[in-house]
Length: 218
Image (tube, rainbow, N blue to C red; front, side, top):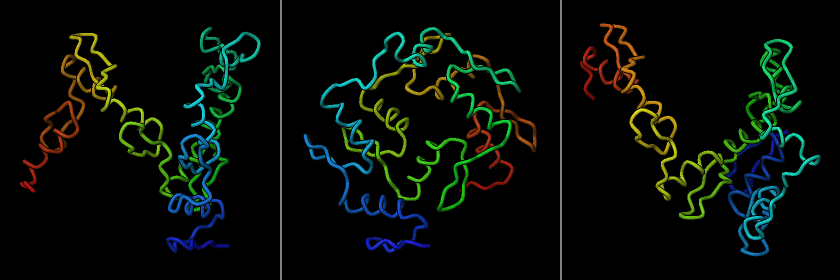
């Protein structure tokens, strides 16, 4: 059964996705913060937002209460994979890992059919269909699909450079930029031209080199 949005006229296979899409476009029916009236698509996001006002920590690190979390400190990994031997701190992590071997993907998208090993990955995938961007920057209002993208964006405001080169001390805001920088020290050229064999440290440099063979300067 198809569900048609009264707002954008798009068709969705799931009533849940239709509801999220309508909330995203109109803001109506969205849960709102009682303190700042900021609207959210999902109740879970609103609950997490409340803690930015109350400064409440949802979970405490205490013995005998958050055993799984404690293993972050102790480095204990009691759950091992029978196939490859990889160890995990939580049984749920091992369960998800097994799907690498079994190829099981129990969570399927109702819109496009794409399958995932974890429900959280499916939920994040749904945002691509609804165009939701639930993670907003407090400084400039920019919105992002993923929390990791928002955290990376914050560095443009703070100018923090958390990743430093162990060789020369140069610092970067992104780990990928640091890894690329390391190639200057190792002289490693991983990207080779299939025509003449010339090698480059960056794929972009190789692509630019290919133009010398194709004569395509556009």
